[in-house]
Image (tube, rainbow, N blue to C red; front, side):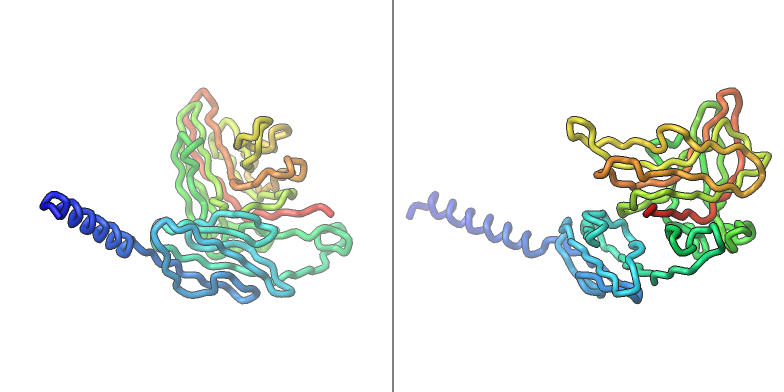
Length: 286
């Protein structure tokens, strides 16, 4: 064998060795999984190691008398919420917790949800333990907003003990947009948002919104805000009010992924103020 051929052979072997070594030393991340009482999760609770950028399939199954409520911790993507299928990408160390809640059906006062024959009211968001998950919408926000966990002001009509306080400021014509960072597909239901806007809050309009992913006629993803018509705008009336958004008529394949609020400037002057948000609930009509 000539020296040239020998050199090329050695070079190829060394290159192969380096490639194999690089594969063996690929970065690994740890996924810590936990779950509350009332269900199981696959992979099972505990630490699991995965190669960088691995997409891990997750499956939750509620025990009898329980239902899956949400994921806590790092963001989890929905695959099929009805089947309990989710996934998470391992681009760093992650920690997630599957939360199951007991199904309770308590009879209410006549005419109230919960009465036999009436749809059950389910709580999507409350603020008893904190305000984790609320963020500023970088895509639509123009003004400034800060969030606080307020244990001194809450809605007495629902026996709440804490709320989300939002302090905002915006220049004329700007919009402040904030929402709950939801990582799973919510049901097509009627949503009720409890809010308190004081009389000294300065804004041009105040509206709740729900954003979905739905396909257009060409099959492309679009991200419309609902409601499109009959938007439940709120005046600053210095009292707790319920704003209703009916999502039962949206396209069947639409996935709900944001629920939040927009505060718009008047177009004539700057605006500053504060408002409070309490429980967000929903009803699935029978």
